[in-house]
Length: 422
Image (cartoon, rainbow, N blue to C red; front, side, top):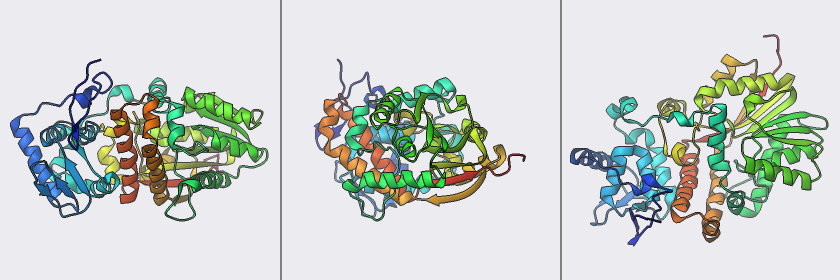
């Protein structure tokens, strides 16, 4: 199998599989003028940031702070000049730059994201920023493909860095810094809080949109609830069913391979944990109308949702990002304002409560990232190459930095349906 060598890490050349990673292997062409402009814009941005950016010739930019090592300046600038932030991430995947403390460096960048691009270019974003591909639209068929690309990678992969609950969402800790032995307890604390908000107990008819690997359904069933859980991931469905059967709750929990739009029936409560991020802007009204339609009068819907500032969401909602290209195709993080406006305009639901827990997600991601790094050899043994491991490290670090900088937050929402005649 042919390989190429687009990058180097501290003097070591990386071999990248061109069939798996064509855009990482491919160094985009750029005119001299465009490359020169990119260099000037990058230099202008870096000079004002609390970073130390070091180039192979000894040049150093920044005001001091976390170190960023640029191993291949030409490729680094060409990727950014032609592909923007997608190119920035691909350059890391290719080994063209690195950082001893990647989270710290990305936290600086995330906290300054709105100021990194000059205002004139920001206003012209619609002309230069790549558009989301139509193939990633979250139609019923598209959503299945998008979900499968992430969640059907390998149950064994996720088990390597998640705790024994296999919960793949923000935990809720009692204090910081969090430690690995407390992660499972913190995940149960989060799940129990969501179930308490939804008033799930003996006899509750509960609809869960987004199964994960079944931990919430298990804890709801232990309370005496009857749970219908929906997922589009075959891998998750199969393992969730196995875990539920082994726990003795198969008579109380049904896990179905089913799009939320295809759900039927009426429920006392609906819970959905970090599912809205996979819905897509176009389908937010449909998603919330589904919650409304499935919820009985007097019922309660509870969401755990990642959010971002409204202005940044508006700027990014139609552009194609690195995270969409490589990690969550079709995804889009909403803002608090977008969630509440959509609920107000399209449903009979009322926003009864909202609590933010962004710092808890930063700690959750740190524990996952450290675990993933510690078990890199086991990840490799599963067949995931170095480019994949750099991609996944960048994703976990990128996400953690988003929460640490305040660019991202995570909310617990309670919606109630008190006035069905409205």
